[in-house]
Image (cartoon, rainbow, N blue to C red):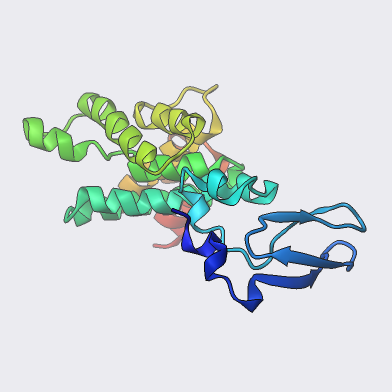
Length: 244
């Protein structure tokens, strides 16, 4: 059975349309199920301007359904997956709104820091949403939480959720590597781990007593020692000092 949107028996007169090449302005004709077409004039491969690639961001059968996906879309596909991961995280944690909120705050800080540090946002944001995802299993099994068990349970759950969404193994492996290590990253660790560390640390610090009576200069020096990225350090000072 075909997806109705790709089955020609459901097509109407708008199934074939004309547009202009965005590169050279030459007229082009598209069928609605063409992912891309090459301009007859400038030979540039052009993405179908009317095709909605939303389902292809997570469907593992996307290439069989749509054919060869456009290069521009492939580059963004992992990034689009993060929204699906966020939904699955919320569904998995159910009514644990405190931990859902914590994960959302970590992701928010991770995105701000990651953009400035030019980290892989697909990896960083998926890891942010799944960093503590094992907490539900741990509480059910032993009733209390510790980092050792969190580092064992979270990767298992994270892998299950990402495989369910059809994520690539390469992306899953990178996310699991972060989720399975809650210790402070070493100096030579990759930027994705450092960004997640800073985002998680800032989330915890923002929810407690913040400066706790420490003078600004002393507190700034403390933040310099705690945060591993320049962007994380700057954001921490903005959130914990300048906003108060």
